[in-house]
Structures are given as structure tokens and as C-alpha cells.
Image 1 (cartoon, rainbow, N blue to C red):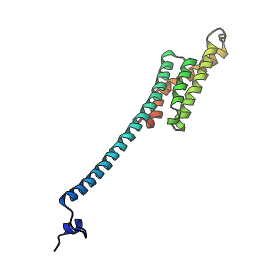
Image 2: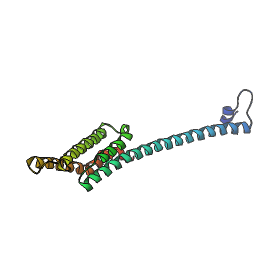
Image 3: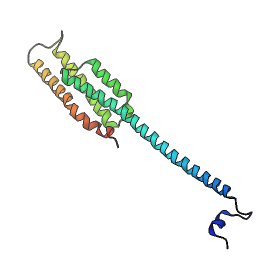
Image 4: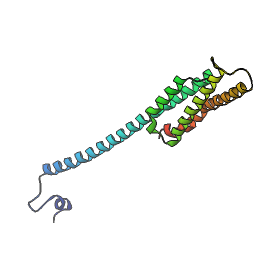
Length: 165
């Protein structure tokens, strides 16, 4: 009576040698090892892509924080600072959904409005002391407050994009 193992590895032409059995088992082991290695490489590639995306998004967040910090520190903005922020964001524009795109656009528009108001208050063509100047100064102050408030707001806005999972 033939044992189960012999029935499994033997064919009609006879039983293979022990070397042939180990060679077949070796091929199976190498195949399994290749699959395991491929899975590990896929995981590494996926994690690398996530990390690179995180780095790009972090660059944008830092640019926003730097810009808003400058506004807070100086109490004003400049055309160059606004353009620098815009360029940094445009480099990573497609890494974000509509919410961040709109948010950066809001910062951009509020900044240019504040700059426009600042120019009415300073320089050769500044408004004379009076009611109109006071209104412009109040509007400029509101824009400054909105922009400085964004230092804390921006963290919440970027949170879902910078969370590591």
C-alpha cells in the first residue's frame, strides 16, 4: 500500500528522486520569497510617495505661516511678500482640494486689499487727516486683524493635509 506522500509526489513514470523534490520545494520557496519582497517594495514606495507629498504640503504650510507671521510682526505687507506666497502656493497647487485653494485665494485677496489701503494711508499720495482717512485706517485695521487671525486658523485648514496616518 502506497503512502499518501508517495502518491502525491509520484507519477506514472515512477517516483522522483529526493533532489528533484527539494528542487521543486526550493522553487516554490523562492517564488514565495519574491512575492514577499515585491509586497515590501510596494509598501516602501507607497510610504515614500506619502512622505514626499507631506513634504510638499508642509512647504506650502510653512510659506503661509511665514507670510502671516511677517504680517503680524510688521503690521503690514508688501507686494513682494504677497507674490512670494502666491508663487510658493502655485508650485503645489494641485496637491490640495478646493478648500485650501480658496483659502489661499482669500489670503491673497485680503492681503492685496490691505496693501491698497496702506498705500492710501502712507506715502506722497496719502489721504489727509479726516473722516475718509479714518475710515480707510479702520478698514486697513480690519484686514490686518483678519490676516493675523489666520495664523491659528491656518493650522486647522491644513490639518487634514498634514496629518500622518
